[in-house]
Length: 131
Length: 212
Image 1 (tube, each protein chain N blue to C red):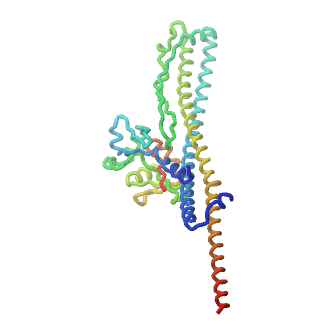
Image 2 (image 1 turned 45 degrees about the vertical axis):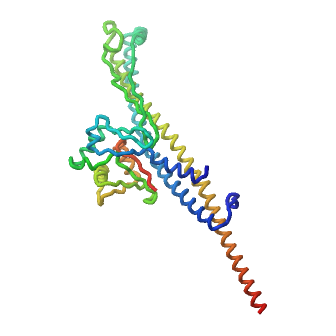
Image 3 (image 1 turned 90 degrees about the vertical axis):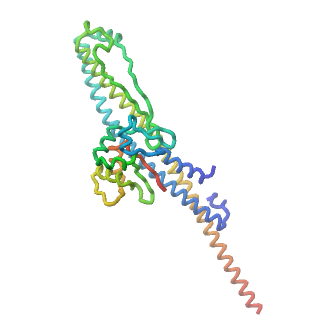
């Protein structure tokens, strides 16, 4: 197999842990077993305490807007260790968790902040690799 | 170097190689990002292991103190006898959850600490000191289960980290330098061919001028 093909396969495998369909916070809260099915067929379950923590950060009306899991997009062109949080509700929640000022609709966070975010929201956040 | 010389020095090959270098570089950058993310996850698990280990060791020390007290009050032989009578079946649900596609075990255990009547020994013939020791060991067991789950997660993450690091290194130290070397070789060869062509044309021109 050529090196090119190997690299392509490697890149395609980077995002297999992502869900086929994301859940809104409201859907997750109302579900008895809040979970999503990943592209590789595995099931990813959200912890209820995390969902309740997120619900406490958002006004009732925004619960439909927040899509779970929150994606921490790692993009090499942003620079090593820099991640982007897209989506208005997602950026709002993350800025509150990290106590960071939100300037636009999206948020850029850096490696130490990614570590804090993952520590506080281990099941409701996931990495997304973009190229 | 041998690989660099094996490629044919054509413009087509140069374009193809440039594309391959771009792809390899992209792959390298992304895998490096993945490695960074894995390191974050790994250190987080290590931090939790440290906390869980401290808690478990403290609890085990409390439990062993209670057991020593039990040996002293009830007697060693009697305590051993009671431990043989005690029955334990612990229901555990072992599933997996995924961190970036890596399956790590998730152990869900019910209540480990039991009612004194559920332990299986007679409470009429034993002391409350023994109940206390049993309770402390049950608490320690719960903490040890949590610790083992974290240990397994750390192993899974470490394995993936090692694999990713090997791939990053293969790209960084073998594939990309080889491709760059081949690229450099083709560019030098094409420049050389251009120079040869230029000289040839100059000489032809000079010869034609001489003939006139």
